[in-house]
Image 1 (cartoon, helix red, strand yellow):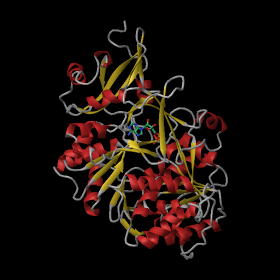
Image 2 (cartoon, protein in one colour):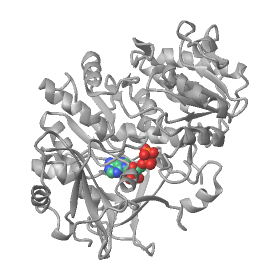
Image 3 (cartoon, rainbow, N blue to C red):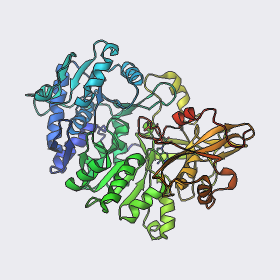
Image 4 (tube, rainbow, N blue to C red):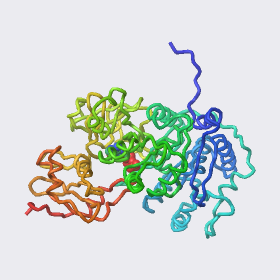
Length: 543
Ligand code: ADP
């Protein structure tokens, strides 16, 4: 027997329509590439998304067509998210930090019809021009007055909108229709496309909104440093309008001082981004001796947040929510908000819980399995490969039958490539990417655990632990450190620190100092490049 309830297909444009009705005062503040600050309400964004849809239709863009973006966090990027998906086309965000080769591969693979670029990226497109697919139209996200002199045939975004009606007859789409496309960073092999649907996107937004509720509430002012150009800024462009939170878009200026000033001026209540970004902000907070006023919560994820960073924010009264996820999961999978009884626990225990990757979002199931694919217990000890399942997880990859064939196990779970434990109270603890684990004498060593502890040494600015080949033990850990000042740590003192928490055989055999760690296109430490750099490294006892 079926229930007797209406069936309205879930649709992305409904989010903005709702926000413009229910939260008319909320909206976007954007640092523009033109140099000034721009304000727009969700109602205005909804009207401009309609104008954009008209403009795109005139360019011949229709349902299913891919419209790509190469842009910072700003209101025009946000309008494209809605205008493009709303008209039934697919918003394809491109990460400008990818190599030129990867970018060209993605543009070709996605068969983009139009590429919308911020002023900043016009030189990049000019450099790639000869290799861009024929027929790809280019638009610059600015007005006529700021259009650059360029040998390319460039459309002007504001002219696409000018004079168009501020309402659009948004089509009623099947909720399973494709809405947005984002490629994985592809550290090895070609990037693979996660193709989100209207249904998956709306469900993800709702899950994020109800779970990370300390950030997402009516009147909140959220700073997404996590980019719209990758992993949908963790769903914020969709979750914020639902709740009536405003988005403070930082544009291209992401250094600690610029972020601090923007947060202060705009009364930012929460800020979302990867740990590397918060290192910059933390130094600025330390230098000024205070937080930006009104700062309540930092949401951190994308790579493991070091406990020292979490404690630094928490001690100054800023709540830390440590989240985990991936491109293939829309992307948020877990959140680190503590339950009411957990907030009664001793400080140390609370900080330990916050350093873990948190509990699953509603709708995301998790299992860990051994090498034979057998389920392992959720006891906080058993370490296995993490698989996930749910409405916000990919079922395969866009136009890639080979990768799709390998994406799911025989029971339909997606293999994350992460190695983890899950505790009885549901807390996920990521030990490593499976390819970054260090295999020493048949036992695994978690680089994340070691890094976390080393980061608590005040002489360490940042660090990474990588596997180095060893004739006796297969692999042994090498510690790579960026020192904070002149007074460099010794390996002995770091060993002493580590021995409080890890076994002797897990201690790094050697340490090397570097000026900075190589980062991936998403701001994570690139272990791949570090391993390449230290290829052939000989440990002291390796003969
Ligand atoms: P991106 O393309 O953003 O780099 P990926 O989807 O490749 O995104 O990255 C997802 C991976 O990042 C996860 O599988 C995990 O290894 C790592 N990751 C994300 N969040 C965390 C976290 N909080 N702690 C540890 N690792 C994380």
